[in-house]
Image 1 (tube, rainbow, N blue to C red):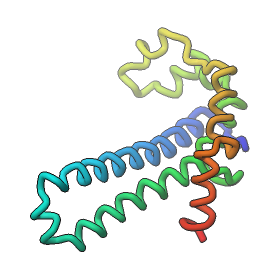
Image 2 (cartoon, rainbow, N blue to C red):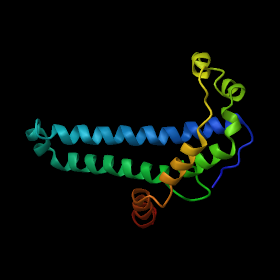
Image 3 (cartoon, one colour):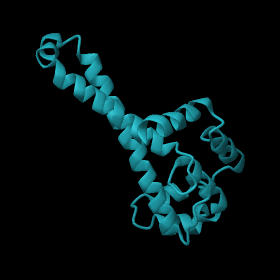
Image 4 (cartoon, helix red, strand yellow):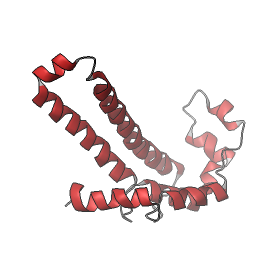
Length: 152
């Protein structure tokens, strides 16, 4: 469901907030994988503090899952990828060059970024919205986990 915004700054805020969730999920995931990969090389250290590492790995795994559940949530009143893409589709004019330059006026790269069209392709946007919807089995699995394990 589209999130009502009044200006490009509000769109930037939505983009920034959701990107933090996505980046954090990736960081936790990479940290988890790095630790798991190092278990064989540091087997003695892991064995000597098995409880600590088990809780650490579980916490990292939970952190990834919680963030992914938020990113792919389908609730109409939350900031999630589906709602953000719907909002972008409804406010595509904020990607026209003049709005784009205004939104990124503080960036030293605004001129080079504005050289190419920044307007999202409507067909690709529709495909992306379908991909992040509950009709995608992976997204549906996250929704089930969110509803049955994470949130309730």
